[in-house]
Image (cartoon, rainbow, N blue to C red; front, side, top):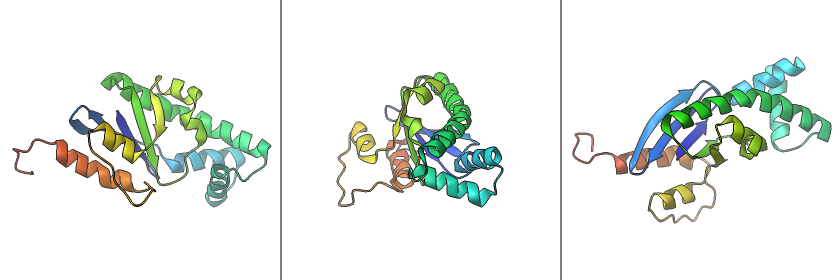
Length: 168
């Protein structure tokens, strides 16, 4: 499977194949690109476009505006999906878990985006599920997993790296 962390300016792709975990790629695409798409489409300032994105994320706009924003965002996210599709093909991946520090557009989980991503199954990041898939037990008093992605990646990388090298 692949772990995808969408940041403000770029997206990091980390691949796990069996007991091997490694960094695969950085895609120059992030939340800022979505906001700029809104900015250009509506000819508004970046701060207004960011507010529009935030309102879209929590579905706090008229149905017509939500639909218009979704069309704009999806058309821009299709390029991101195509980049994921290339990584999927190159590494023969089936599943992608996506994490972000902001609310992601719901269309990322739909069939239309999946087609853009080379038919890769794209689902929200779920730390407990990934930990179980790798053979560990997840115990947490805190139900939220926000911010766990960045903390989990180094642990998994250390755990699965060769233990006879100088770093470990």
